[in-house]
Structures are given as structure tokens and as C-alpha cells.
Length: 292
Image 1 (cartoon, rainbow, N blue to C red):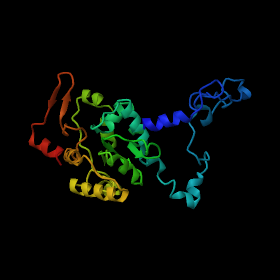
Image 2: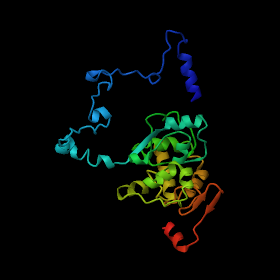
Image 3: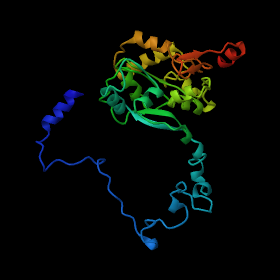
Image 4: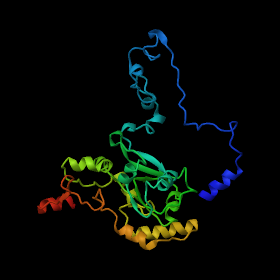
């Protein structure tokens, strides 16, 4: 990646006052709003209503009338249950390589949603129907060179994203987390201080069982031999040799259990942050409940 950057710099002209400028995102241009009848007090937004307070309805809503996406048949299926759809925050291979270069992510290590949030790589809000991150290859397919064991919640339909990680000896796993588990992953310290036991991670809904059971999608419900066979088939299709197979198989054996949220912490345990203790359930009924 550095050699490629140096080749580009050699071809660039010398830096002078005639050819330097800011990035497009460097400056925010102020949008001047009309004054209207309120003489600048409301900045052209009026004095009442949704537009004045900024609480605008979704696109297609016509106020008191029935929205067009409900009256026109061809829009019914597209906008059906739009307020309940699961959202996945996109993160690119370019972003992962940037975090590795900044030493905010460590190579040859295990990375999950908690790690990505702690290194300021992304943000997730479960109150906005956000169920994790989605890895895509729109940027960084030709620059990613890290060897990592990463866990994401969704993948793009293309195989290039998986191939870009596995050709360098890495491993990728897609895992389902319910909203309660997402809250525990986002801020573990806050949840530990609440004194509540670590909850169980629920199984995915029926519409996603096939996705998370597929070895082609590297689902966490697939077995380790199935994923190893899928890795070999993908390497044959894309023409590269697999490396670091012993470490990858060990990563597969050390994956989280389907009811587990954190590495090394079982459901039902209570973490005492102040005294640095872990309290485990002593009742057989509790152990049986959390191991279901």
C-alpha cells in the first residue's frame, strides 16, 4: 500500500499556491435561510407545525391524508413495516485497514462489536433499530492486508469481502445479537455496574436462521468443518492459497457459544467491577436456565 502511494506521489506536480485546496468535507458552507414574516426569529421555518420544530414526517407522508406509499399498490411491499426494519451500520474494508494502521485494532486478534466501538471505529444505537454492523467492499478491496478474526452481523451479497479477509489468513463470522445483547456489547462497563447478570443471547428470528446457519455466509451456527470446506471452495474460485489454517481452526473452536455475548464470560454471571470479582450462579435451576 505504501509503495502504491509513493508511485502516485512521484507523478503528482509540485505543491504550490495554485494547486492546493481543501477537501470537500473540510468546510461546511453556511446555508442562508429566508427571513419570512418573522423577521429572522424563525429563519424562514414559520411559527408552528412540524417544519418549525424540525419533526418532519417520513418521505411520502402528506399530513392528515393517507400517505401515497399506502394508497398506491406498487409501493405497498417496498414500504411495508419500514419503521420495524433492522438497520446495520456499514463499515468498509478501507475503514478496517485505517484502524489497523492507526494501531487502534491489533492484527492477529479477535474483533467483535465491543472492540469496534471502543476503538471509535463505528457507533451503534439499538433504540434506532440498529442491530450491529455490515461489512462491505465498496472501498478498500485492493488495500486491505490485515490478518484479523472479525465478527460482524451482516455481509454484502458479494464474495469479494470474505475473500479479501481470508486470503491474508483471517477469519470472518456473522453473528446475530438481539437488542438487549447489543446494549450489553455497546457499553459493558455500564451494564456490569448495574449489578444485573449477563443475559442469554437469543437465537435469530426464523427469517434469518438460514442466513446464520450457512457456511457460505460464515454463520456462527455453522460447524467448524463446514466453514473450513467453504473456505477451500472460495479459495479455489478466486485463485489464492489459504494460509494460517492452524490458527484459523483454533479461532473457530474458540468462537462464542450461540447464547454467549462476551468472550470468556458465560450468561448468568455477575461481574463486580469494584471488587474485581465474578459471581457465578450456584443453583442448578439457574445453571440449567442459562445453558438452554
